[in-house]
Image 1 (cartoon, rainbow, N blue to C red):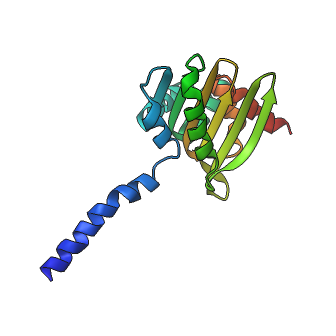
Image 2 (cartoon, rainbow, N blue to C red; image 1 turned 180 degrees about the vertical axis):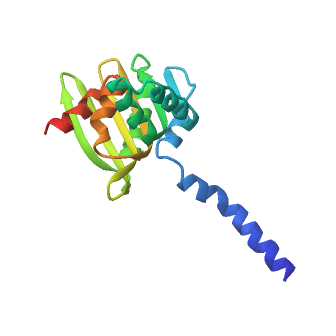
Length: 181
C-alpha cells in the first residue's frame, strides 16, 4: 500500500509541470524565450501593479477619464509586451514563426486585423465565458519593429474601446474602431 502511494505521488510530481504549463498564459512561452535578449524590449506588469494603478484611479474618481481608466484596470490582471527592433534582421524569421505558432492555436479567435501603409495589426481573444475574455493579444508589425502585447484578466467586450483610449500605446487605437461599427 505504501509503495502504491509513493508511485502515485511520483506520477503526480512528474505531471505537475505539464499541468501548470498548460494553465499559463499563451504569451508566457514566447516571453520567456525572448525577454532580455539583444534586440528585444520586454515589459511585464503584474497583477500587483494593476492593483496599485487601480487605487490611484480610484483616488481621482471626480475625473471622468480616471473613472474610465479605473474600470479598465479592474478587469486586467497582467500585461506582457515584447518588442523586437527590426534592425536585427536575423531574429525576425524565428520570432515571426513563434508568433505564428501562438496565433494558430485553437484557443484564440481573431477579433480583427488591420493592414495599412506597411503595418499590420492583429487582435486575438481567448474566451473566458459567455461575456468576457481571459486574454487579448495584439500583434503589430511595422517598418521598424514588431510588437506582441498580451492582456490577461476578466475583460468585458465593452471595455476594449476604453482600453485603447486609456493605454495610449501605438496600435491600441485600432480597438476603438470596434465601438464605431
